[in-house]
Image (tube, rainbow, N blue to C red; front, side, top):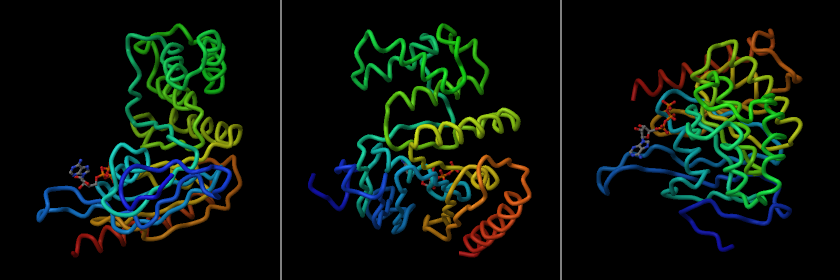
Length: 265
Ligand SMILES: Nc1ncnc2c1ncn2[C@@H]1O[C@H](COP(=O)(O)OP(=O)(O)OP(=O)(O)O)[C@@H](O)[C@H]1O
């Protein structure tokens, strides 16, 4: 497929590339010509196949914008985004499940859109619900599920797309700390089992360190890559582990510096 300097993520041959997604000098402005606000400035970032990267930054620094560009929901103003494996799967803070469908039917809908045959959908939806530890919940309606269970269904639905790249925008931010902790464990397990690449947006430093192999810090206004850390702490980690805490303190310091610097502009 021809490469363009702007526009939607491009599908390339997955085998020929060493990344699940590549952002190459990506910038994004909003607003009318002459009154434009530069939100993302010259972002270059690769996520390797099977890698788990968290994108961290202060509120309003452009994290969601970056994810939306990667998902193809909006076009970059400059630069190029390549997603070799095709359309990424998406998961947001709001579950966005259809309330009139059961948990199972919500997952099946994604399977249908993927082109899975009707007679295979039920079994595949059951398998995905079991993967997120919701076996037996196929017939439950959305209002019968807790917040954590809804996010599990949303995760099963995202996985139903069978994409090589999963984009997650603060998916656990609305959950209580204990439910979030459990879902961190589940996500780590599912990431290990499936080998999916994950780009996960959060403003929670401990969450970023708990989950990722690499934490990328964005500065604010405009969003630029300020720093990144490789997280060598073995999984499974716990959010209260001493090593997770120590690195979180270091990253928080750096984040504070970025916020102070932004405040002085
Ligand atoms: N469609 C849009 N039109 C105009 N401005 C926008 C649009 N989308 C985002 N912005 C602006 O871009 C900036 C970055 O927003 P974005 O939602 O990406 O930040 P964020 O880092 O995800 O914030 P948060 O952590 O609070 O969710 C903000 O100033 C926002 O007002």
